[in-house]
Amino acid sequence: MNLSLYAVNAFIVLDTDGHRVLAKYYSPKGRTQLGQPDANKGLQNLKEQRAFEKGLFAKTKKPGGDIILYDGHLCVYKHSLDLIFYMLGGPQENELMLHSALSAFMDAVHLLLRNQVEKRAVLENLDCVILCLDETIDDGIIVETDPTTIASRVSRPRADTTEIVINEQTILNAYQTVKEKMQQRIGQF
Image (cartoon, rainbow, N blue to C red; front, side, top):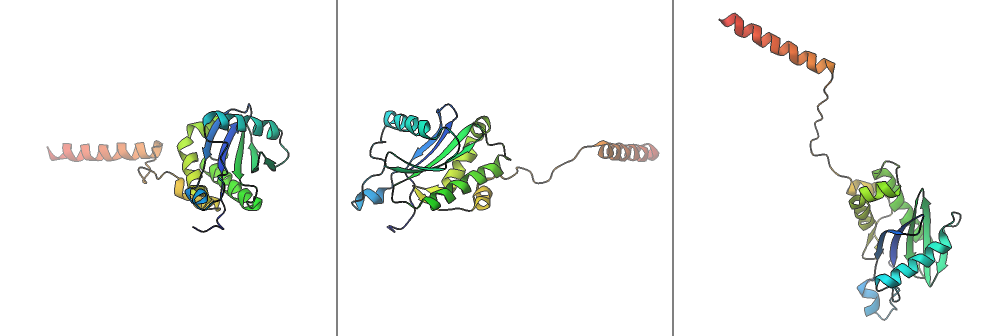
């Protein structure tokens, strides 16, 4: 395993009341096997995670900063209307790389949700948001930092690529065609 890969311990989305919208905690298998400490040791169950998220929200609920060191985790975060997006890494991680990954993820979500990144839109399109997260981070390793690439991999293909536009002109053309066919039929009798 390459030890120089940039690792993410958790990705969390909280609303402005501090309630969880989305949370994904990573514990890569290779780190514990190589004798490195598990970064999420105190975050193994839901109760510990909720307590951690509550304390993290208390420290970051006011906009202004974008990086803190909280409870042994390097935390990069961004506010977006009624949501706060967090990316957590170990204290030894590169904060610029975490920030770059978080920015790429958020830009891709902005592209997919057409700049309507709010709690309701995120919950309605949770499948796209989670796919975006999976394209950005794979098992705690940052794999992509280009928002357009992430969005293009996630975007839903159209079921039918030909779009039929119905307006007055197309209805008039259809009427004329039917009228001509009827005149030809009547002319045959």
